[in-house]
Length: 102
Image (cartoon, rainbow, N blue to C red; front, side):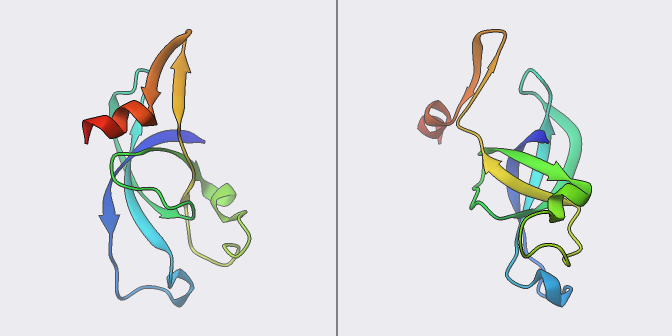
């Protein structure tokens, strides 16, 4: 899994039938210091993540392990919304604190 920040949503009215009903998010991966990396990815969302939230993203065949996704052409899936990240005993991210900024 990787940590990413939700940057936006992707809307596609013409897509594979198996993707009907799947919310698509644009996520940007983060480094160990919480800085954005240049990589972006479109990921399916099963947990209801929103803009600016930090999330856990699984990629590859693991993204299809969720029940109901086995036949979907999904390479990345948001599988968790992060509450806190601590690195070397220091709080790097707190959802509660981040919500106050927006």
